[in-house]
Image (cartoon, rainbow, N blue to C red; front, top):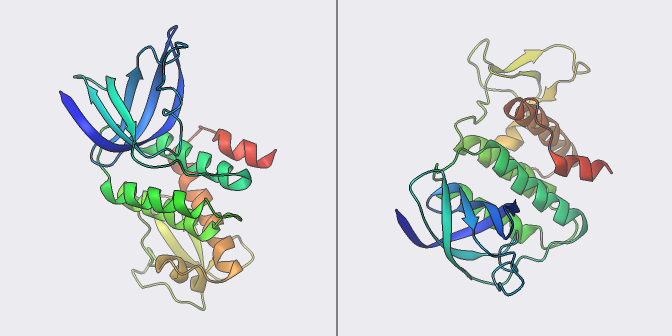
Length: 229
């Protein structure tokens, strides 16, 4: 199989054998794929500079299994310039895609959201709303989208009530708002992607941390550790 000139971004790369790189690549039409870039670590190679995160690329590859060979690569546009916390946020998004996406599972809508998120991260400070919405879109694309209803009654969430989130089940109304619950108002704002108040953002971040941690299992995200440092 030979695939030509697909829009793509490098999510992560690491050395492979003596002169090559092993690439985790997010493509528009083929989802996440793994490619071997042969010989690009040689001194005379001009491709290594292109094979970096946040550079829009057109990539061609060939192969018959999950690990295929890079055939050619060219820039589709200038790299997204991320600095400081925006760079750490970009690394977080990339690592999240590497960890949770299945290989060769197309997500063209998610690819578009990814590009929009990178654009937002070129402006300081970090657009926390865009990050939370990207996480929400990622979950929806993978089939783990949240249902904004009380799973015990089937009733829609109410803005003046508080809810606990139970992984695998969803939200359930609680009487004690101090028990780590979420206000319905915040959850409904997140469902509409209208994170206009600080408390909406705080609840969305806390909720996404819980949901994504379940997907990751025992895996730790190195980008989170960099944030903490």
